[in-house]
Image 1 (cartoon, helix red, strand yellow):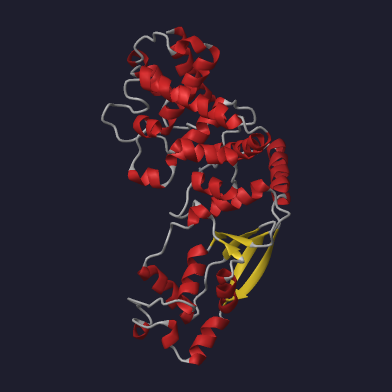
Image 2 (image 1 turned 60 degrees about the vertical axis):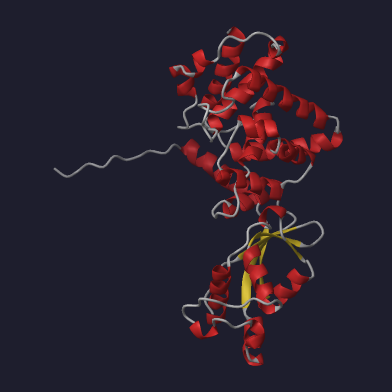
Length: 357
């Protein structure tokens, strides 16, 4: 008897929902293809027709990687697409490719010396100016293709491109991508609060996480989840992106919100410092802060203070009793941590423990 295969059935409703999502997402994407010679790319970067986002400026290739890229270009190997976003000014913001462009500029117009080449070893130790004019012209004439997300694409489409391209490399993470896609007074406050001594003391992170701006992600989630979960669909990046855009506008319309939200943050940090013996850490000597634990304690404390402001300076029973309980461990596991039901459970667990305790 042959092996029976189980046929997986997909409902017509699911297929219809998928089709609607595809159509909706596709409408937000509006782009065009372009192709530039190396000569034009170098010139446009030099006169600042290309804009390098702040979050990308600190990431610089080492000499070996620069040399390897130039070697590939000279050999005629395919170069990955450049990705741009068309700004209102008409300039192109670089989403992916700033290192390639800067390396080209440094080689053609600067003083970049090639080193440790494998295929073109004879070029090691040479600069662009050392090459004969004919070879210089051939390099200038090489072309690189680009994709430009134009001005008609919406902000969410822009963020999707930032996130999908940049988080695929070591260059950027979600917090950095959000800073690149959305600037404004709310994000300015987030950056400011992420650098406070109180947060650094209560929520230690590794040097790698600090470079990746993990504290900015924690502060943003603190405000986003604390203001309510309406519209949350188990996707933090999309939810927080939409929230950040909305709050940037709110802060512009009502500048007094800056101090209101700063006070909220400082109130909760002072409360956590007073009530929780290890802050957001698991143990006294821990040098990392689990995100789910931070969310539970920070936002749960805010919700408790919001409903019962008297506990800010009141006596709170020893929280270690429930912090070390199986119930708290269960709600702060990282498994499926972004599912809305689990997220709400850990926030409510801490809120109820503080209030009922």
